Length: 600
Ligand SMILES: Cc1cc2nc3c(=O)[nH]c(=O)nc-3n(C[C@H](O)[C@H](O)[C@H](O)COP(=O)(O)OP(=O)(O)OC[C@H]3O[C@@H](n4cnc5c(N)ncnc54)[C@H](O)[C@@H]3O)c2cc1C
Ligand code: SF4
Image: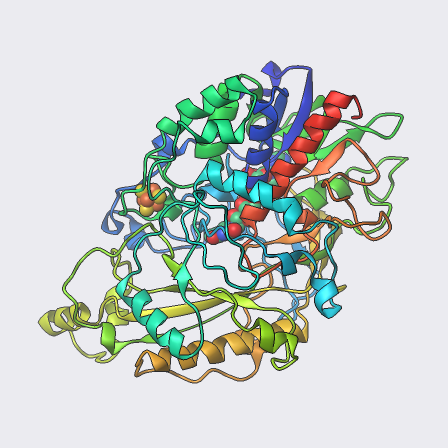
């Protein structure tokens, strides 16, 4: 990859993009394929999944049999490098240590950011999700609707490759015919969950995930994605031919060396670099956006993490794509005489209304799944099926006690046993060892089912981040301080999740189902822990009530844009990344058009 040092970067670019994950990758791809000259600044190190992914290493060869540890919470082989719940030397703080008031912040410091190991679940927001306030009077409407974003969902799905089906369910949009790839078959536990879910009125349908279940069509897709741009078509056609289909065998969280799933580093950045229009400076910790005398953004100051030296780069447009909270931090740290409250903050709303996804889970052992012959159920490295939210009518009628829905993801099946598997499988007979333990493990392994709910959080005044007045990171940059609180809507929703899962497990014949605590405060995962941070620079129809307009363009500084989840005005139950990419593509088209018109 063409990774530059600060010294070899040019003096001036059309666009600087800060961050290289889903938002930065999509932005750089769209801009460079259309001829814009882009500099990407990435705080983490260079990373190439094609050579660095430990796809085939077995757990037994790793320390602690590959189990997670504080430095590698998702396991020894997980793709995250230099990141996690804590990044050494780069702290953040919480205003309160009270239970339920803390926010956990996951960061990845590497090229491609969190996309190297994310779960790849790629759901479209539905029409309701863009107009939640109009439906129930809570939170905010977006200034755009589903129809504005749908063409960009189509493009992103075509480019990255998403499997799934069109089921025509309420607020669960179909993709146009021919875009989705065929879904993998359900695993045995998923089939049982589907059958018993039906008895409870819960629909279980193929999941949508960014994994190639067959190779993308390099003959037709480039022309559909880049009409009238033969150079972009040729670059994409060549690139698609080197992306292989999934071979159903290795954990996606380690990354994918054959480029069968979506990572920014395997899907967005290679063709963008092939245009010759993209320069990347890794280890570049952006500190602030600079402005000229007229108040327009004119560049970015960053610290080279390898030399600790400060550098300044210039461009006509600046795009923040550092992850929702990190982009907030950059704006708040960009203070000047003209913008003493930080950049793009005339509304005072930068940092306000941060949201995560509501999470709660419940699992049990299902004897009906015991004793199958040993076989490989790795599948495509993640969920083959899921349950979209099914209680829209009941919720609208006010029968549930909480305003927004959740979808259900779940794990079942046999993949390579990890550390602790044997002990977990010995749950029914803790004294066994030797041959008895082996027999018991074989009988029980793969018969556990664990459901998790992923629900919508409504933005509230108590959940925000700001600069900590005292604490700085090792680069001397003020850090974020978080304030957090779930409302009763989320807490009741979490309790509903656990009740539903316990009922569902009982319907599946589970024998060891504990009944959940009715208090949702016991069920709900801490804020930030689902790692779907959005909000903080929300988009809206008026400059007094939002940070960006409908094009992700800051109201105050017309050549400054936010590409990440910061612009979300609500956080539907649907996992956010597909929407981040769709909005980034839409924003990039706007930047290209405005650059051509000379407006930026
Ligand atoms: C375990 C896990 C599972 C997930 N599963 C799913 C899923 O199934 N579906 C889904 O939709 N989402 C999922 N997510 C969330 C998903 O990863 C994020 O929504 C997505 O990556 C956000 O993209 P982004 O570009 O905004 O941020 P990131 O991908 O985090 O990229 C931001 C980049 O900016 C860089 N950066 C930050 N600050 C600076 C700075 N000051 N200067 C320069 N660079 C900077 C970072 O180093 C990083 O590389 C998951 C996340 C995790 C961790
Ligand atoms: S399961 Fe498929 S997509 Fe995932 S890492 Fe393995 S080959 Fe790649």
